[in-house]
Length: 434
Image (cartoon, rainbow, N blue to C red; front, side):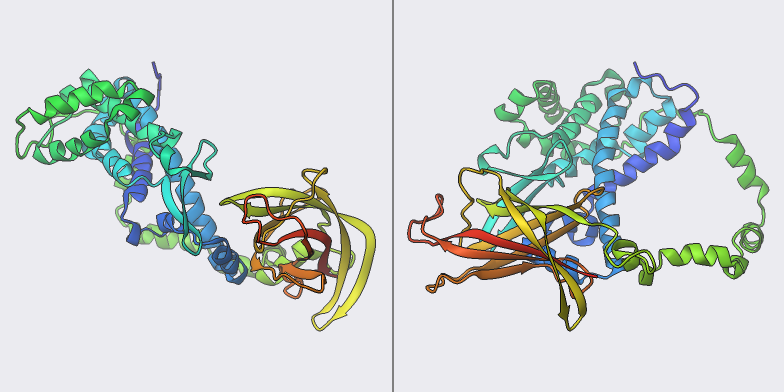
C-alpha cells in the first residue's frame, strides 16, 4: 500500500492539480495546442533542418520549452495512473479531486480517442509513415499492422481507467450522470480481442461497460460525497494570505526591496550576465579571445547516417587525419581537415542511392553529439566519373561544414531497381572558422 504520511495537503492541492493541468495540455485540440502540433507535424527532414538553421535564439528556446512541456505531460500521465492505482490509500481530499473536481476518468477518454503518442508523419513527397512514442520517450516508426500493439504510454490510460471503474471505492463515490455515461461508453469500441490479449484486466472494464449500458442514471447528478468535507490545509499559507489585506502594497514593497533595479549598477553582476548574452554565445562555442584561435570543442569523430526505407541508418564514422589546411574565403579563414572513412561493415562499403537524406552527428573529445548537420539532396550520374560533392552545414555562419565526395559505383543499391545508379563515399572534409 502507498503510505504518504504528512503529505495529505500536498497531494490534495498542488501535486494533484499539476498532473491534471499536464493532462489538459495533452487533451487540448490540436489547432490550439502548439506543444502537440510540433509533435504531430514535425515536417520532413529537410524542413526540420531549414527551420533549425534559420530560427532565432528566442525561437530555439521556445522549441525547447514546448519539447520539455510535452515530455512532462507524458510523464504526468504515468503519475496519474499511479495515483489512481493507490486511490484507496489517499486522503479523502485527494480522492474527491480525482473523482469529482478534476474527474480523471473523463480526462483519460480524449487521450484514447486522439492519442498524443501516435502520429502520421510525412518523410518526403507522398511517403507517409506511422510513429509511436516508445519506452525511452522517443518517436519510432511502426508498421501499420502493429498499430494495435499497446505501448507503455497507451497502457497507462487503460490501467488508470481499470482502477477508476472497477475499484469498489470509485464505484461508490463516483457520481454517474447521463453525460459521464455517454462519454464512458465511447471506450467500448476499443475493447476488442487484440486489446484483451495484451491487457487481460480490460475484461473487467468491458463487463463494466456492458453493465453501464443497461443502467439508468440521473440527468443532473454531480457528486455522492458528504455535505461536509474536512481536510488538512496549508495553515502557514492561509494565515499569510489572510493577514495580507493590502496585496498591492505588499507587491510594491517587495519590488522595491528584493527586486530593485539597483543591481544593474553592480559591475560584477553585469559582467556575469554579459557572458550569456547573444553576442558572446559564439565565443563560448568557438573560443574566447586570448585563449587561442582554434575552437574550444575539437571534432573527434562524426557519425554519418543515411535514410533507408524510412529509417535513419548509421553507415560509417568519420575521424580527422593530420592533413589540415588554412584557406582564405570571403568570410575569413577556415581550417579544412581531411577525414578518414570507417564503414560500419568494413568488408563492403555502403552504397548510397541517388536521393540522399543524410544526418551527421559531430562529437568532441569531451562532448558527445554537440552538433548535428542534416541534408536532403540528389546526386546525378556523371559520365565523366568525376567526383560529386555535397555539403552539410555552413562554415561561413560560424559553424561547421562537412563536405562529402561521391563517385558512381558499378554496383546497384540492393533494395532499389537494378537500373538505378549507386554511389560510394570516397572523400570527406570538415571545415570550421579559425
